Length: 96
Image (tube, rainbow, N blue to C red; front, side, top):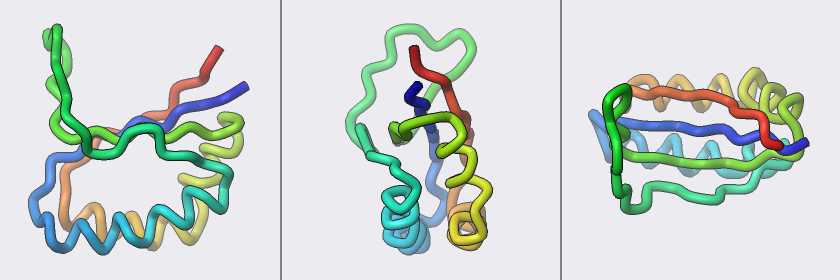
């Protein structure tokens, strides 16, 4: 069953964040992930609990692969760049 990794990023250093984007993409692909949306326009309809700023949506073949990606040494290394250049909310959602 597919799983989706959703990321909402508020960039604090866009130039530095670009380094993260370049490193993360091949790691996502190595773990079977496919970007479905990345930084596109957002049209918020209701925001009582959450007001997203910059979204990425990545589909993985399974929640196990999404977790393996997130926990991998390669991604954790790239994640250090992201944490220095953005505030983020990240979660994995199982598909149907």
